[in-house]
Length: 394
Image (tube, rainbow, N blue to C red; front, side, top):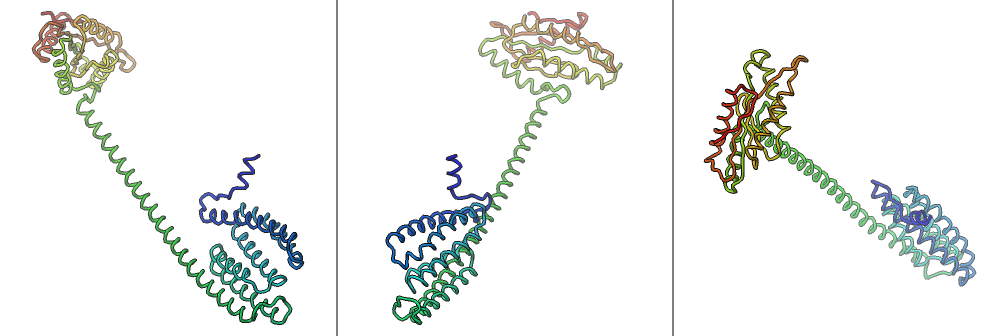
């Protein structure tokens, strides 16, 4: 409940309409101030005013009451209507008091000038012209009443005073018009510059976004090219060149810290018969199938690559010869037990594997030497009848 009351007492906000929000905020506070002022003045006028002032108290109460619908209309967004209502009310009230209580008075002049300024600011030049003309007319009307002694008290020479006030009001209008026009032009220029700045910022943002997208695309393209440069296009395993780059580093590390390092080389048994019987497309599918099975068997630290043709190679850091032989045997069984399907029919293939290791406290001169030993073991596996594992023994 209190939150609702608090929101009601706060100035209204119209999304996306900054000028209307500013106008409404000004009217919101003006209605509250006028209401408070007139009610207070109504009370003190009733207590301490002259009989003539007391007779005019009803208009103060009416002005206070009119602030209620003005307040509500402001929250509804009827800012121009409320502005016209408030200015007309102020102008009419001061003219009424001039007619029945005070005559031509300095307060009236100040209020008229204030109304002209407010009209120019809130409603535009034609409203300021209208209120200036009405104020001059009211001044001469009051001067006529004083001159004809229908209105007392008389202050000086009413016609001379009316002429002076007319000049003051015209000068006030000219000055107000000049400053309002200057301010309006400055605001328009400021808005134009703001719109232009936002447009430039949007263009820069789009340019930055475009450049960012281009950089991302180029990075992605570069990453794809780098990936293609180090992988075999068919199986997705590393290619021979990249394998040797990594293998050299791993061998150097194993030699420096005297750690075990193993290599497994294997190829597909009778792969030429597969190509001759089923065609090279099926042969390629067999290679892809072997590559997929190989990835399921290796650790993250292991390096697997297509060594050439139907031949594959694995580099196994921190793995002894016995462990590498067990891994090779599991891989052999995995390939044997998972045939590839061709037209719904299984095509069984087998692999022969050679294993070589650089054990702790045993020297191997280079990675090429280690691979050569694994290749010799593979050669023995082929001559042993294929579909088997042979570990190189010194």
